Image (cartoon, rainbow, N blue to C red; front, side, top):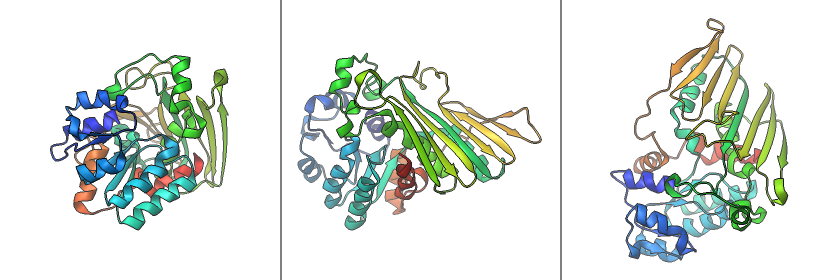
Amino acid sequence: MGDLLRQAFDHPNVEIVGICDEQPARMAGAAKNFRIAADRVFTDVDECLEKSKPDFVILCPATARHAEYAERVAPHKVHMLVEKPFAASVKDADKMISAAKKNGVMLAINWPLRWYPCYCTAYRLLTEGRIGDLIEVHHYGGNRGPLWHGADKIETTPTTAMKRKSWFYKRSEGGGSLLDYLGYGTTLGTWYHGGRKPIEVTAVTDLPNGLEVDEHSITVARYASGLSKFETRWGTFTDPWTLQPQPKCGFVLKGTEGTISSYDYDAFVRMQTRKHPEGVEIPADKLKPPFQNPIQYFADCIRRDCAPEGPLSPKISRIGQHRS
């Protein structure tokens, strides 16, 4: 939420008219960071929406409550940008889609990796046919863990006791690295695969130190073209936005005529082709508004009355949800 509020705060045509959380203490940092007046801070969703009258809302509740909040917000006739993952289950995802359709509002699911220039460049090169037909997608994604950083990526040092109290580590709330991160790989993987669905999916998780949820998962998806692999990790050695861990967080695409590797925050992608089997580095595309972040993009969708496309669309995200 801190990242999305920062983008809203920095957008010249977006105003933060209210924030809401049932636990007031969790809003203190954001209220201070973005100079949000006390009369714009709420603990009741309906009161917040009735008084602030927003054009769209950003939803970042616990994963297991995404459907609950979408069904509460949609009747207020406001568009909804939901922070990843889509939902805790396909059933919940369908409830969210239904609520948006019934109330005539847009629904978008934000996958932050969609806005990384290197991944957009990989998609462009792929769709241009530069590596032939896509055969495999490999993804490794994660960070040190969700409790290592708060709003605006302010660092903290979590304890086991903190983990046991946090919704991120509660099964009933949709916690775990698989639900947190697998959707990145499977949703962008669906985007790269041209919207195709897998034939078969196998997933393995690891639950360390008596925790309720996993901190590590590996998922294999079988397509007609072959196998793709998606791995999630809470507990990487470093956070990718500061120093890339090993294994590196990112994507490798294998096609019939070449390969593309792209990694978090890199300013380039590396492409192998039959002409250049040694590989060449290609500078990442420079993204322009409204394709630099989800707030720009969703505000533009609303302005133009055009449904979100690609990974943010419920259609692509729902296919990814099937594998999550």
